[in-house]
Structure formats: C-alpha cells, structure tokens
Image (tube, rainbow, N blue to C red):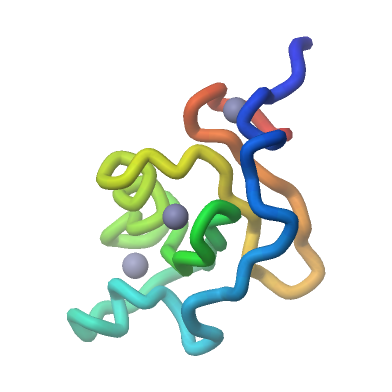
Length: 86
Ligand SMILES: [Zn+2]
Ligand SMILES: [Zn+2]
Ligand SMILES: [Zn+2]
C-alpha cells in the first residue's frame, strides 16, 4: 500500500472552525450524525451517514483531501483523493 502524499502538504496543526458541530448544518439548521475535521483548513463537517454529508461536500467544493474524525476518542484520518485511511 502506498503512502498518501497529501499528508506532507498538511499544516502541522489546524484550529477547528467550531466546536459546536457541523458548521454548515448549523448555518442551515440541519442535524448531523458524526463530525469530521478538515486537516487543511479546520472546516468542521458532517459524515456520509449525515443527511447533508458536508465533509464530502467540502472536499468536492474546495479540494481539501484529508479529514480526521472529530469524534471524542477517535483519531483516524481519511484521504478523499486516495480513498483510504491514512
Ligand atoms: Zn492522499
Ligand atoms: Zn453538515
Ligand atoms: Zn478544508
């Protein structure tokens, strides 16, 4: 399995845009299931089990490839571009 090259391009740390929940769901008054944190800009979006899938939408809109789980106790990362856990 080859390594994800996108990891090298990430900033060393990002500040979450909010700790309240999915920022896009909060803006439209929707709800979410799980939260994902963009490791490029700190965008907080919701997972693919959520009605609006804002984390995936964020990747499609701005192309930031790597996200991390924003759930307590979870620290796995996912690269959208490589479609694998990294
Ligand atoms: Zn990658
Ligand atoms: Zn959302
Ligand atoms: Zn981002």
